Amino acid sequence: MSSVEGSTALVLAQGSLFGLFGLAIAATGIVVCVRARRRTDPARMGTIWLRLLFAGSFLRYVFHTTSSLLNGIMWLIDQDVALDSRYTVSMNITISGVSSTGVFFMRLANILFILTCVEFGNGFVYALTRQQTSVQRTMRLLAFLAATPLLILAFVESGWGGSVWTEYYKTAVSGGATQSAWKKLMRINDIGMATEAITLAVFIGLMAHAAVVKHKYRKSQPSSQTVTLYLVATILAIVPRALWNVILYAVLIYGEVYGIRDPLLQIPLLIVFDIATWFIILMLLFVVGIRRHNGLWTIEQPWMNGLPPLAHDSGGQPQLWYGQQQMMYQQGAGHAAPNQPMYYQPLPHQAGQYGWQPQTAVAEAPGVSPLEVPAGDRAHMLQSGPDLRPAGETTYEMKA
Image 1: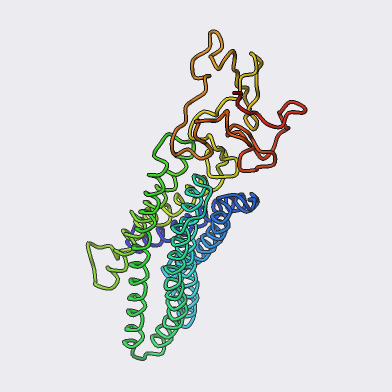
Image 2: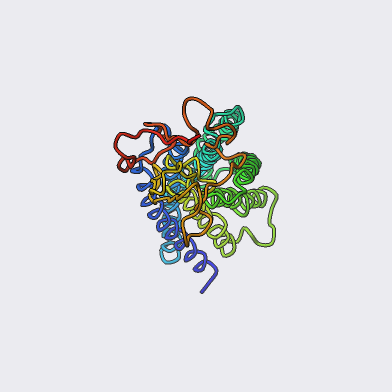
């Protein structure tokens, strides 16, 4: 197999992989879109951006699939048939226009990834404190400030790139000098290099933000695994994806480096470091956005940091903790039931756990008991299921 035949096969394989990954992204994106979120859901804003991220990524894969397949088919035909120069120029203009549109949606997907990760991080923090802080508002503002220049550069790169490629091919077929158009193409590469450098810096900031959120979940909490997936997604966005794109643009601008511009090497690296890596990142965010039992959704309970507190002494009668799907027993004066492990006993107060109150002077305190589950408080109960409280009883209060 000659070098041209090998390059043609790789281009067609690249287009096929773009198409397969695009179909998978479309299927998972539909699942994300049909899962509605409540207004009080800490992940609601993040999932809105996640839906747009899947849409932008899908369009990027569609346009790059089209450009890769057209390019491969053109190379394949050109080996057997001497194509008319005007037909070749027309095809090259079409391919460059489709490819430029794909690059625009790739830039747009990067911006949506930034907004999604920031909102997911804010959602995880809000799930711990149930409060909107100035830090969360600052992170949201910084995300939009970072997205603004990236969006402007994406429009300039895509629009100007399409027109310059058209000028270049038309000048070449007419026999004119192409130096002016070629210099403009190099300037477009400079814009792409600047965009990738800014994107890499912002992604590093996202990873730092995710690491801080992970530190807040350093204890054995159910959501810790989901936060880890969120952190891994930000790391993969930096290494290898963003770093690879910076290296690729540096090679295009500053010249040949170890044969990276050779399609036989460049295309496999593109498949591994960009196409497949971005698909993995999307699947990680999909898991973070869909998980309900270990995620940051409305079923997040005040006792998720440990075992739920038990109800008051009821003379040996089993008591149901409202909102839990299991029965918690208590016998005697707060002692464990016979032949039962000691973890059935009430746990002491642990600092830093949302929903817990100091246990001092509980019996003398008037009003609502810290162990009471307020009726209608959606932050302290499951979203579905019957009311498990005994008839006529509305609260559980500590006995003096």
